[in-house]
Image (cartoon, rainbow over all chains, first blue to last red; front, side, top):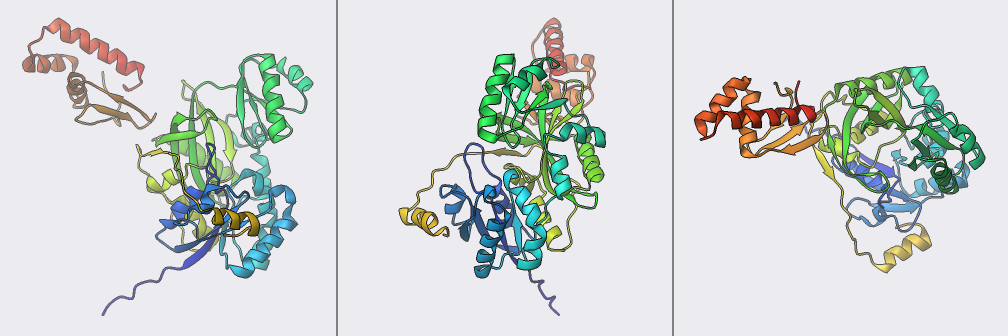
Length: 354
Length: 79
Protein backbone atom coordinates (compact mmCIF):
# COMPACT_ATOMS: atom_id res chain seq x y z
CA UNK A 1 0.00 0.00 0.00
CA UNK A 2 1.35 3.41 -0.91
CA UNK A 3 1.69 5.95 1.87
CA UNK A 4 -0.29 9.09 1.15
CA UNK A 5 1.90 12.09 0.52
CA UNK A 6 1.33 14.72 3.17
CA UNK A 7 -0.01 17.89 1.63
CA UNK A 8 1.89 21.05 2.43
CA UNK A 9 -0.18 24.10 3.30
CA UNK A 10 0.19 27.17 1.12
CA UNK A 11 0.32 30.42 3.08
CA UNK A 12 -0.10 33.91 1.79
CA UNK A 13 2.59 35.91 3.54
CA UNK A 14 2.99 39.68 3.49
CA UNK A 15 6.44 41.16 3.86
CA UNK A 16 7.66 44.73 4.33
CA UNK A 17 11.22 46.02 3.97
CA UNK A 18 11.56 45.62 0.20
CA UNK A 19 14.12 48.38 -0.09
CA UNK A 20 17.59 47.26 -1.09
CA UNK A 21 19.88 50.26 -1.07
CA UNK A 22 23.31 50.24 0.58
CA UNK A 23 21.50 49.91 3.90
CA UNK A 24 19.07 47.26 2.71
CA UNK A 25 15.83 46.13 4.30
CA UNK A 26 15.34 42.50 5.35
CA UNK A 27 12.30 41.96 3.09
CA UNK A 28 14.00 40.33 0.12
CA UNK A 29 16.13 37.91 2.20
CA UNK A 30 13.06 37.02 4.29
CA UNK A 31 11.18 36.20 1.07
CA UNK A 32 14.07 34.10 -0.22
CA UNK A 33 14.01 32.07 2.99
CA UNK A 34 10.22 31.68 2.76
CA UNK A 35 10.57 30.37 -0.79
CA UNK A 36 12.96 27.72 0.54
CA UNK A 37 10.69 26.62 3.38
CA UNK A 38 10.16 22.88 3.39
CA UNK A 39 7.06 22.77 5.58
CA UNK A 40 4.82 25.06 3.50
CA UNK A 41 4.47 26.76 0.14
CA UNK A 42 4.04 30.49 -0.11
CA UNK A 43 2.40 33.24 -2.04
CA UNK A 44 4.19 36.50 -1.32
CA UNK A 45 2.53 39.86 -0.90
CA UNK A 46 5.05 42.69 -0.88
CA UNK A 47 4.22 45.78 1.15
CA UNK A 48 6.09 48.88 0.06
CA UNK A 49 6.34 52.46 1.23
CA UNK A 50 7.96 53.91 -1.88
CA UNK A 51 7.65 53.16 -5.59
CA UNK A 52 11.40 52.63 -6.01
CA UNK A 53 11.85 49.83 -3.52
CA UNK A 54 13.58 47.19 -5.66
CA UNK A 55 11.71 44.23 -4.13
CA UNK A 56 8.50 45.51 -5.75
CA UNK A 57 9.85 44.60 -9.18
CA UNK A 58 11.34 41.20 -8.32
CA UNK A 59 8.50 39.26 -9.87
CA UNK A 60 10.22 35.93 -9.30
CA UNK A 61 10.00 36.59 -5.54
CA UNK A 62 6.92 38.74 -5.09
CA UNK A 63 3.46 37.80 -6.41
CA UNK A 64 1.63 41.03 -5.69
CA UNK A 65 2.63 44.36 -4.17
CA UNK A 66 0.59 46.93 -2.28
CA UNK A 67 1.79 50.28 -1.12
CA UNK A 68 1.07 50.97 2.55
CA UNK A 69 1.00 54.25 4.48
CA UNK A 70 4.10 55.41 6.33
CA UNK A 71 4.19 54.55 10.03
CA UNK A 72 3.77 58.25 10.84
CA UNK A 73 0.23 58.08 9.38
CA UNK A 74 -0.79 56.05 12.43
CA UNK A 75 -2.40 52.69 13.16
CA UNK A 76 -5.89 53.58 11.91
CA UNK A 77 -4.67 54.38 8.39
CA UNK A 78 -2.56 51.23 8.38
CA UNK A 79 -5.45 49.07 9.54
CA UNK A 80 -7.78 50.50 6.90
CA UNK A 81 -5.20 49.76 4.23
CA UNK A 82 -4.94 46.20 5.51
CA UNK A 83 -8.70 45.87 5.51
CA UNK A 84 -8.68 46.82 1.82
CA UNK A 85 -5.78 44.49 0.99
CA UNK A 86 -7.44 41.66 2.88
CA UNK A 87 -10.64 42.15 0.88
CA UNK A 88 -8.62 41.03 -2.14
CA UNK A 89 -5.99 38.75 -0.66
CA UNK A 90 -6.12 36.25 2.11
CA UNK A 91 -2.99 37.10 4.06
CA UNK A 92 -2.23 34.44 6.66
CA UNK A 93 0.93 35.90 8.09
CA UNK A 94 2.75 39.22 8.12
CA UNK A 95 6.46 39.96 8.53
CA UNK A 96 7.07 43.55 9.62
CA UNK A 97 10.74 44.19 8.91
CA UNK A 98 11.39 47.78 9.95
CA UNK A 99 12.10 49.07 13.43
CA UNK A 100 10.15 52.23 12.66
CA UNK A 101 6.93 50.38 11.75
CA UNK A 102 7.06 47.80 14.52
CA UNK A 103 5.43 49.96 17.16
CA UNK A 104 2.30 50.29 15.00
CA UNK A 105 2.22 46.61 14.12
CA UNK A 106 2.62 45.54 17.74
CA UNK A 107 -0.29 47.82 18.62
CA UNK A 108 -2.32 46.31 15.76
CA UNK A 109 -1.36 42.70 16.37
CA UNK A 110 -4.52 41.56 18.09
CA UNK A 111 -6.84 43.56 15.85
CA UNK A 112 -5.18 42.27 12.69
CA UNK A 113 -5.49 38.70 13.95
CA UNK A 114 -9.01 38.90 15.35
CA UNK A 115 -10.65 41.04 12.69
CA UNK A 116 -8.68 40.23 9.56
CA UNK A 117 -7.09 36.86 10.34
CA UNK A 118 -3.54 38.15 9.80
CA UNK A 119 -1.03 36.63 12.21
CA UNK A 120 2.36 37.93 13.27
CA UNK A 121 5.13 36.92 15.63
CA UNK A 122 6.34 40.14 17.19
CA UNK A 123 7.69 41.09 20.61
CA UNK A 124 5.33 42.54 23.18
CA UNK A 125 5.27 46.31 23.51
CA UNK A 126 7.11 45.97 26.81
CA UNK A 127 9.82 43.78 25.21
CA UNK A 128 10.04 46.19 22.29
CA UNK A 129 10.41 49.29 24.44
CA UNK A 130 12.76 47.87 27.05
CA UNK A 131 15.37 46.84 24.48
CA UNK A 132 15.18 50.24 22.80
CA UNK A 133 18.67 51.69 22.60
CA UNK A 134 17.62 54.52 24.86
CA UNK A 135 16.78 51.96 27.58
CA UNK A 136 19.48 49.41 26.77
CA UNK A 137 21.84 50.30 29.61
CA UNK A 138 19.09 49.63 32.14
CA UNK A 139 18.09 46.51 30.20
CA UNK A 140 21.65 45.15 30.50
CA UNK A 141 21.66 45.80 34.24
CA UNK A 142 18.32 44.02 34.67
CA UNK A 143 19.42 40.96 32.74
CA UNK A 144 23.05 40.71 33.87
CA UNK A 145 24.54 41.58 30.48
CA UNK A 146 27.34 44.09 29.94
CA UNK A 147 26.17 47.15 28.03
CA UNK A 148 28.29 50.25 27.34
CA UNK A 149 27.36 53.22 29.53
CA UNK A 150 25.09 55.63 27.70
CA UNK A 151 23.21 58.84 28.17
CA UNK A 152 20.44 60.60 26.27
CA UNK A 153 20.69 64.12 24.91
CA UNK A 154 18.07 66.43 23.47
CA UNK A 155 20.16 69.48 22.48
CA UNK A 156 23.67 70.43 21.38
CA UNK A 157 24.14 72.25 24.67
CA UNK A 158 23.29 69.09 26.53
CA UNK A 159 25.90 67.20 24.48
CA UNK A 160 28.70 69.42 25.82
CA UNK A 161 27.41 69.10 29.37
CA UNK A 162 27.18 65.30 29.23
CA UNK A 163 30.59 64.93 27.62
CA UNK A 164 32.27 66.29 30.75
CA UNK A 165 31.67 62.91 32.39
CA UNK A 166 32.66 60.78 29.39
CA UNK A 167 35.97 59.78 27.83
CA UNK A 168 36.61 60.06 24.10
CA UNK A 169 36.01 58.44 21.74
CA UNK A 170 32.26 58.13 22.14
CA UNK A 171 29.54 56.81 19.85
CA UNK A 172 26.72 59.15 18.83
CA UNK A 173 23.59 57.18 17.90
CA UNK A 174 20.21 57.96 16.39
CA UNK A 175 17.10 56.54 18.09
CA UNK A 176 16.32 54.27 15.12
CA UNK A 177 19.41 54.14 12.90
CA UNK A 178 22.88 55.55 12.42
CA UNK A 179 25.90 55.66 14.68
CA UNK A 180 29.04 57.76 14.39
CA UNK A 181 32.23 57.83 16.42
CA UNK A 182 33.33 61.19 17.81
CA UNK A 183 36.84 61.93 19.02
CA UNK A 184 36.28 65.54 20.06
CA UNK A 185 33.57 67.72 21.52
CA UNK A 186 33.09 69.49 18.17
CA UNK A 187 32.75 66.20 16.30
CA UNK A 188 30.17 64.98 18.82
CA UNK A 189 28.08 68.12 18.29
CA UNK A 190 28.37 67.80 14.50
CA UNK A 191 27.19 64.18 14.67
CA UNK A 192 24.39 65.16 17.04
CA UNK A 193 23.15 67.83 14.60
CA UNK A 194 23.23 65.48 11.63
CA UNK A 195 21.65 62.49 13.38
CA UNK A 196 18.95 64.49 15.18
CA UNK A 197 18.00 66.19 11.89
CA UNK A 198 17.56 62.83 10.20
CA UNK A 199 16.17 60.59 12.93
CA UNK A 200 14.81 63.00 15.52
CA UNK A 201 15.39 63.21 19.25
CA UNK A 202 16.65 61.97 21.62
CA UNK A 203 20.18 61.12 20.52
CA UNK A 204 22.30 58.67 22.45
CA UNK A 205 25.89 59.24 23.59
CA UNK A 206 27.44 55.86 24.26
CA UNK A 207 30.76 54.72 25.65
CA UNK A 208 32.99 53.38 22.85
CA UNK A 209 34.00 49.75 23.33
CA UNK A 210 37.00 48.72 21.22
CA UNK A 211 36.87 45.19 19.87
CA UNK A 212 35.37 43.03 17.18
CA UNK A 213 31.73 43.48 16.30
CA UNK A 214 29.78 40.24 16.17
CA UNK A 215 26.13 39.82 15.29
CA UNK A 216 23.63 37.12 16.11
CA UNK A 217 20.47 36.46 14.14
CA UNK A 218 18.00 34.47 16.21
CA UNK A 219 14.42 33.71 17.14
CA UNK A 220 12.77 33.39 20.55
CA UNK A 221 9.59 31.36 20.97
CA UNK A 222 7.98 33.71 23.48
CA UNK A 223 8.22 31.08 26.23
CA UNK A 224 11.91 31.55 27.00
CA UNK A 225 13.33 29.10 24.48
CA UNK A 226 15.77 29.88 21.72
CA UNK A 227 14.46 28.55 18.42
CA UNK A 228 17.70 29.22 16.58
CA UNK A 229 20.76 31.48 16.62
CA UNK A 230 23.55 32.02 14.14
CA UNK A 231 26.49 34.31 14.95
CA UNK A 232 28.19 36.19 12.14
CA UNK A 233 31.25 38.38 11.80
CA UNK A 234 31.23 41.12 9.20
CA UNK A 235 34.03 40.72 6.69
CA UNK A 236 33.31 43.75 4.54
CA UNK A 237 31.61 46.85 5.81
CA UNK A 238 30.11 49.73 3.82
CA UNK A 239 30.70 53.33 4.80
CA UNK A 240 27.35 53.11 6.61
CA UNK A 241 28.72 50.30 8.74
CA UNK A 242 26.50 47.71 7.05
CA UNK A 243 27.79 44.24 6.32
CA UNK A 244 28.42 43.64 2.62
CA UNK A 245 30.01 40.28 3.35
CA UNK A 246 30.09 38.14 6.47
CA UNK A 247 30.86 34.69 7.75
CA UNK A 248 29.20 32.40 10.28
CA UNK A 249 31.43 31.75 13.25
CA UNK A 250 31.54 29.34 16.14
CA UNK A 251 31.22 31.14 19.47
CA UNK A 252 29.72 29.19 22.34
CA UNK A 253 29.87 32.10 24.77
CA UNK A 254 27.91 34.27 22.38
CA UNK A 255 25.26 31.57 21.88
CA UNK A 256 25.04 31.16 25.67
CA UNK A 257 24.59 34.91 26.05
CA UNK A 258 21.85 34.83 23.41
CA UNK A 259 20.10 31.90 25.09
CA UNK A 260 20.27 33.68 28.44
CA UNK A 261 18.74 36.86 27.03
CA UNK A 262 15.92 34.97 25.33
CA UNK A 263 15.19 33.05 28.52
CA UNK A 264 15.30 36.15 30.75
CA UNK A 265 13.18 38.29 28.46
CA UNK A 266 10.88 35.56 27.07
CA UNK A 267 11.58 37.18 23.72
CA UNK A 268 8.95 36.54 21.09
CA UNK A 269 9.99 36.49 17.45
CA UNK A 270 13.07 37.32 15.43
CA UNK A 271 15.90 39.53 16.64
CA UNK A 272 19.43 40.57 15.92
CA UNK A 273 22.01 41.11 18.65
CA UNK A 274 24.90 43.45 17.98
CA UNK A 275 27.73 42.58 20.33
CA UNK A 276 31.24 43.90 20.79
CA UNK A 277 33.81 41.30 21.79
CA UNK A 278 36.85 42.85 23.47
CA UNK A 279 40.42 41.52 23.25
CA UNK A 280 40.04 40.00 26.72
CA UNK A 281 36.94 38.07 25.56
CA UNK A 282 34.29 40.21 27.23
CA UNK A 283 31.00 40.64 25.44
CA UNK A 284 29.19 43.97 25.41
CA UNK A 285 25.67 44.15 24.08
CA UNK A 286 25.52 47.15 21.76
CA UNK A 287 22.03 46.83 20.34
CA UNK A 288 19.03 44.52 20.01
CA UNK A 289 17.11 44.86 16.76
CA UNK A 290 13.57 43.51 17.19
CA UNK A 291 13.32 41.95 13.72
CA UNK A 292 15.33 39.96 11.24
CA UNK A 293 18.47 41.69 9.96
CA UNK A 294 19.15 42.13 6.23
CA UNK A 295 21.72 39.31 6.39
CA UNK A 296 19.17 36.78 7.72
CA UNK A 297 19.32 34.69 4.55
CA UNK A 298 22.75 33.56 5.78
CA UNK A 299 21.01 31.64 8.59
CA UNK A 300 19.08 29.70 5.96
CA UNK A 301 22.32 29.10 4.06
CA UNK A 302 23.94 27.84 7.26
CA UNK A 303 21.17 25.32 7.92
CA UNK A 304 18.67 27.25 10.06
CA UNK A 305 15.67 28.53 8.18
CA UNK A 306 14.65 30.76 11.06
CA UNK A 307 12.16 32.63 8.89
CA UNK A 308 10.27 29.38 8.31
CA UNK A 309 10.27 28.71 12.06
CA UNK A 310 8.74 32.10 12.77
CA UNK A 311 5.85 31.36 10.40
CA UNK A 312 5.32 27.97 12.04
CA UNK A 313 5.25 29.59 15.49
CA UNK A 314 2.64 32.07 14.26
CA UNK A 315 0.52 29.46 12.50
CA UNK A 316 0.58 27.14 15.53
CA UNK A 317 2.49 24.39 13.70
CA UNK A 318 5.30 22.19 14.97
CA UNK A 319 8.44 24.28 15.24
CA UNK A 320 11.99 23.16 14.56
CA UNK A 321 14.34 24.17 17.38
CA UNK A 322 17.76 24.34 15.75
CA UNK A 323 20.76 23.05 17.66
CA UNK A 324 23.49 23.50 15.08
CA UNK A 325 24.51 25.44 12.04
CA UNK A 326 27.37 25.38 9.61
CA UNK A 327 30.35 27.59 10.48
CA UNK A 328 32.45 29.13 7.72
CA UNK A 329 29.44 29.95 5.51
CA UNK A 330 29.80 33.31 3.86
CA UNK A 331 27.35 35.75 2.40
CA UNK A 332 28.59 38.22 -0.17
CA UNK A 333 26.11 40.87 -1.15
CA UNK A 334 25.97 42.43 -4.59
CA UNK A 335 24.11 45.16 -6.43
CA UNK A 336 22.05 44.18 -9.46
CA UNK A 337 20.45 46.44 -12.02
CA UNK A 338 16.93 45.39 -12.93
CA UNK A 339 15.31 46.68 -16.10
CA UNK A 340 11.77 47.74 -15.35
CA UNK A 341 9.07 48.91 -17.73
CA UNK A 342 7.65 52.33 -17.09
CA UNK A 343 4.11 50.94 -16.90
CA UNK A 344 5.04 48.88 -13.84
CA UNK A 345 6.49 51.93 -12.14
CA UNK A 346 3.37 53.83 -13.19
CA UNK A 347 1.04 51.19 -11.73
CA UNK A 348 2.62 51.15 -8.30
CA UNK A 349 2.95 54.96 -8.30
CA UNK A 350 -0.63 55.70 -9.38
CA UNK A 351 -2.62 52.73 -8.12
CA UNK A 352 -0.46 51.70 -5.19
CA UNK A 353 -0.62 48.09 -6.43
CA UNK A 354 1.35 45.96 -8.79
CA UNK B 1 53.18 24.88 20.34
CA UNK B 2 49.72 23.53 19.60
CA UNK B 3 47.22 24.81 17.10
CA UNK B 4 43.67 25.43 18.29
CA UNK B 5 41.63 22.30 17.72
CA UNK B 6 38.97 23.78 15.48
CA UNK B 7 41.31 25.51 12.99
CA UNK B 8 40.60 24.19 9.51
CA UNK B 9 43.58 23.85 7.15
CA UNK B 10 43.06 22.85 3.54
CA UNK B 11 45.72 21.15 1.39
CA UNK B 12 46.06 24.37 -0.57
CA UNK B 13 47.17 26.21 2.57
CA UNK B 14 43.93 28.03 3.37
CA UNK B 15 43.31 28.44 7.11
CA UNK B 16 39.97 29.30 8.65
CA UNK B 17 39.49 30.19 12.30
CA UNK B 18 35.81 29.46 13.01
CA UNK B 19 35.80 31.35 16.31
CA UNK B 20 36.88 34.65 14.79
CA UNK B 21 35.84 34.24 11.16
CA UNK B 22 39.38 35.15 10.05
CA UNK B 23 41.04 33.32 7.19
CA UNK B 24 44.69 33.16 6.13
CA UNK B 25 46.80 31.72 3.36
CA UNK B 26 50.00 29.83 4.06
CA UNK B 27 52.81 28.94 1.64
CA UNK B 28 53.50 25.24 0.96
CA UNK B 29 56.20 24.84 3.64
CA UNK B 30 54.09 26.62 6.26
CA UNK B 31 51.14 24.40 5.27
CA UNK B 32 53.30 21.32 5.78
CA UNK B 33 54.44 22.53 9.18
CA UNK B 34 50.86 23.38 10.18
CA UNK B 35 49.75 19.87 9.22
CA UNK B 36 52.55 18.47 11.40
CA UNK B 37 51.40 20.68 14.25
CA UNK B 38 47.84 19.44 13.81
CA UNK B 39 49.11 15.87 13.98
CA UNK B 40 50.66 16.68 17.35
CA UNK B 41 54.33 16.75 16.27
CA UNK B 42 56.81 18.36 18.65
CA UNK B 43 59.09 21.11 17.32
CA UNK B 44 61.97 18.65 17.16
CA UNK B 45 59.86 16.19 15.16
CA UNK B 46 58.82 18.98 12.78
CA UNK B 47 62.43 20.08 12.24
CA UNK B 48 63.57 16.51 11.57
CA UNK B 49 60.68 15.86 9.16
CA UNK B 50 61.41 19.02 7.16
CA UNK B 51 65.14 18.21 7.05
CA UNK B 52 64.31 14.76 5.68
CA UNK B 53 62.27 16.24 2.84
CA UNK B 54 64.28 19.32 1.92
CA UNK B 55 67.94 20.35 1.59
CA UNK B 56 68.02 22.96 4.29
CA UNK B 57 70.13 23.86 7.28
CA UNK B 58 68.70 23.17 10.71
CA UNK B 59 69.22 26.79 11.80
CA UNK B 60 67.09 28.01 8.89
CA UNK B 61 64.19 25.73 9.83
CA UNK B 62 64.50 26.67 13.49
CA UNK B 63 64.29 30.36 12.63
CA UNK B 64 61.37 29.88 10.23
CA UNK B 65 59.52 27.73 12.75
CA UNK B 66 60.05 30.36 15.43
CA UNK B 67 58.72 33.06 13.08
CA UNK B 68 55.70 30.96 12.15
CA UNK B 69 54.92 30.24 15.80
CA UNK B 70 55.09 33.94 16.70
CA UNK B 71 52.75 34.71 13.84
CA UNK B 72 50.29 31.98 14.85
CA UNK B 73 50.36 33.17 18.43
CA UNK B 74 49.83 36.77 17.30
CA UNK B 75 46.78 35.70 15.30
CA UNK B 76 45.49 33.71 18.30
CA UNK B 77 45.56 30.45 16.41
CA UNK B 78 47.34 28.56 19.19
CA UNK B 79 46.20 27.24 22.52
